[in-house]
Image (cartoon, rainbow, N blue to C red; front, side):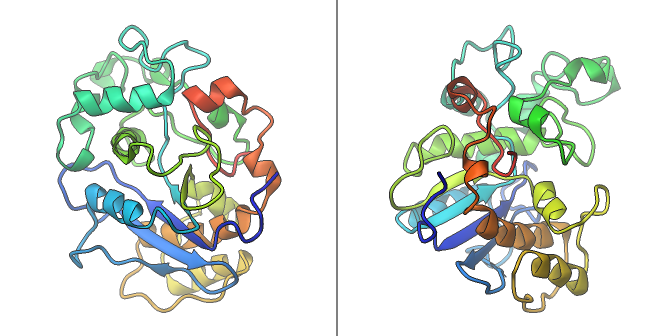
Length: 286
């Protein structure tokens, strides 16, 4: 069963970043309300660039609203097919324990996790040829194996433009710092009221607009409006600049608004209790 049509009245998509430092041009936060109005950007508190901590604070300030927020990073690491999140190192039996472990062992500014990966390169993470054969690090979660429309990256591959490793482990720190104050699906059941958080993948939103793999980045106003129209959204207000981060967030907010009513996306066939507890799921993978 999907949430009631009026359960969520605001939808937020967050294009995330695992970059070093405390201000990140790669973070974009977009929102839209129920209906067909165009999504808009939420400006960072200082007017320049978002920090990860500022995103956390913003979410907590809005936790009582009927808001569905999607983050573009992997909420956990593979577990089911390997029996551990970081084999030989962790005895974490669920994703929340992994989040706590990462937070306890990462020392980076602003909930970053680059040093966590670098300290384990060659053992768990691939950061370059010196770490060995790349294919030895390619392990995927159940939801990533079930995704037949895109090509998800593994959280153990930390090199290249498409890698999600640094962003994902930084995101796990944010999820830990939420402290259960906002439910995170599917680790938590959907609440009867208030905000909820899901994992999203902007490439899934792009496929839903008809964009082909490898051609899914929107870099101008016409391309963005074409994608929004395919999602039942009105055209956006012109932006000063068009970056992948901004357009991904705007497009995915409109997609999340439409996808939230699909019962099949809330009840994927392969999402059993073990997967839900240890690995989570990307909302949008049926």
